[in-house]
Amino acid sequence: MPDLPLFDADKIAATIGMRTSLTPTELSTIIQERDLVLERIINGTSDLLPFSFLEEGVRVGRAVVRITVREDKGRGPQVLGYGTGFMVSPQLLMTNAHVFPSAGLCKDSFVEFDFEYDALGNEKAPDKWQIRPDLFFMSSPQAELDFTIVGLEKKEACAGDLYGHIALRESPAKVKLGEHVNLIQHPQGRRKEVVVQENKITNFFKEGFLHYTADTLKGSSGSPVFNNQWDLVALHHSGVMKMDANGKPVICDGACVFIANEGVRISSIAAFLKSNVPAEQYQEYLAAYLC
Image (cartoon, rainbow, N blue to C red; front, side):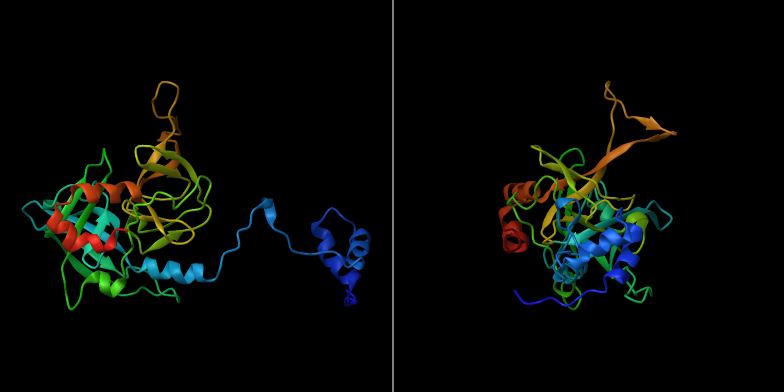
């Protein structure tokens, strides 16, 4: 074994000793044995990820949009609220059914790509697109799978060709209990934000749902939920309230206590689409993008 270079043990001990239970002298002795490694995996699990994790997150994030929900009740279109959505094919957008429960509500609403900050913290100019429920509209109610897929207008190209689209995979084997998930969203209608890593899957349900510990706000409805390979695993749709023994929400300081967030598994939505979209529309708009 080749001889290792000597450490300046006293300097290292003086620097690090204040942050350990060892005295500088004890730490100096350990360092001089030349077997000390000053880096460690903490808590037995590694949080190290390939650098491409960031690049791939940026790529899929381009397909995520802010939705402005508007309705005209006789005085011109009025903003009802905001949501999040994402492209699942060149011309189709997915969000929650409680964002767009009907095709009629889409008429005066619109979506914006690039509603975010650039790397220098400057506001990017958003790219506004109109919604085309006459082109395609498929929905499952909030009490069921809580999703809506709707068409977007075509400009010089389809939105999904310009900004990308996110594959819908029917296989349920994309995420495991305890695995990290990452959400890209527009909380409270703000410019695009992301929550990564400190969010874990806590439960699965046979009805096609899963729970995770990610932060969301009003306006996050319709956000894509990804695993660490940026595979789409769920459609975020709701917070999960803590219940008491009688099945009533637990209240603390006048507010409900939430224990998790809930998403609809993409595998369940993909299976629903294959069985319920009319064959002609399925072949034209979805067949090539469901896998």
